[in-house]
Amino acid sequence: MIGTPALANLAIGAMAGAPLQTDEGLLPEGLNVSFKLVPSIIVIGMMLLFIVAGFMFKVADTDDMWVAGRSIGNIENGMAIGANWMSAATYLGVAATVAISGVYGLAYVIGWTTGYFILLIFMAAQMRRFGKYTAPDFVGDRFNSDAARALAAITTFLIGFVYALGQARGMGLVGMYILGDWSAVTGGALSAYQTMMVIFMVITVAYLSLSGMLGATKNMVLQYVILIVAFLLGLVVTGWSAGYTTILPQLEYGMMIDSLGAEFSEPFAGGSYYLWVATCFSLVFGTCGLPHVLVRFYTVKNERVARWSCTWGLFFISLLYLSAPAFAAIGTALYGDQIGAVYGDPGMTSAAGDVLVVLAAQLAELPAWFVGFVAAGGIAAAVATTAGLFIAASSAISHDIYANIINEDATQRQQVLVGRLSIILIGLLTIVFALNPQQPIAALVGFAFSLAAIVLFPMFFLGLWWENTNRPGALAGMTTGIIVWFIPMFNEGNFGLIDGGLGIDVISTWMPAIGSALVGTPIVFAVTIIVSLVTTEPPLETKQMVRQCHSPDPMPSDKTAADIVAEKNRGGNTPADD
Image 1 (cartoon, rainbow, N blue to C red):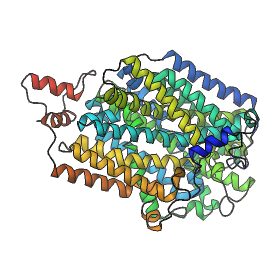
Image 2 (image 1 turned 90 degrees about the horizontal axis):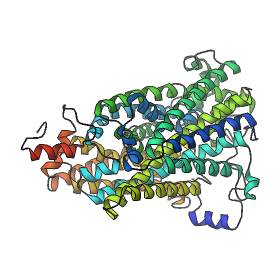
Image 3 (image 1 turned 60 degrees about the horizontal axis):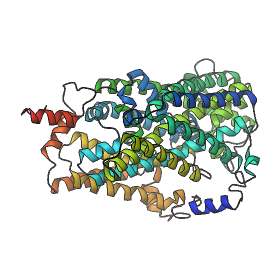
């Protein structure tokens, strides 16, 4: 694989004023890259709306900053889950992966959807009953360890960074269709893609720095409405205009499959059976370990609302997932008819695949304003997910590391300030590394899912369901998980960790970076369980907190499991389910 340039090289290139990407390698073939007035008005108006909403709901205290004051209802939170979840990887990347990789790409649809069933059954209500601010908060308090909290916070920050790279790539690619080539503004130092990516990322960071979780949630509701209407309407109109479908493309596109080539229709032609299973596994359990997903259950008042918001979220998500393969089929057919061969050498590039939803609408000769609306949905999806990622990452730095480890006497004002600075920091890092992304959107996001599945999911699941999981077990498991995740990343040379990678075939075959959780997650479970069994059991109060997470008794919205246990112990009562 091609290694991403190191951070120092990027900085040197920028300071020297040299073009960072002179070959326009991320210029999708067939995409009309030019300034378009009406689409520009649509997108600029949408971004201004996000900024205004962020300002209207700007925060001053930690409750609103991190958990929206625990005031979000189930349908509203379900829509926020949908927007938070349906990133550029969903809106753009799923159609791209299905188009280029055929049946293998369905691993993303199946993996990401199945993960929500596990969340609904095993984790949503239990996490809300535990009742903290962040995912690292849960890890630190459940395992009575600041070291575990710090590891979880670092992992959360790393997940946010890796995941956000895919969103930044989507913003840059789609932005080129709408606003055209603005590289001249930078004197040629940045390419068309890079200029658009930087512009949209700066706007996203600006509104997030104001709004925190409360404003981000309100914006996510708006973003979901925009993205789902744009995607579904774009699909129906594109299929009808191109003559492939009528009113239900989700059911009709099957008639097209035989004409799209074996690469599209034959199982595992685009990836081995093992890779499909490994990818599915990573996506299913990565979904259950993503901090920006789990924190949504902390924004509601009780566990019942948490369950219902997860159910609504799954419904809202399924509307797009059932439609993405149809968009892939229509886009593949249009590309083959009007641009060139989809498969083979050269075939469709990953850049064109990543904007296939927009490209298909353009190739169907739809009005520019309508194609711009479809493109605006992709930007809304990328911005919504970036918001959730950056809030989760900044809370990990501000709340879990700064307020709980570095400065335990930090005021709310100090925590909010550090949180805002953390958003700016991760935004800058994302911009730098997204200048020349080496992987398609779906692959970049897949790396983050593997990390979440390997390091965090075992801690959440065992922490909630096995009361004897202890501090040494958690520390050993998380440390092992981080090491295991980095092995395939080094092997494949992702993010320029090793230029060209190690290239060890056995690792590439059995532990691909995008599906490394199939091997890594069981290892972490085993290490955590074995170490917990051979070391001292956790304190009784910790076990009581775990039992409280499964109690049938309702809990007040302002109480945590630790609060309930402390009150019952003071009163001389035995905690629920003891």
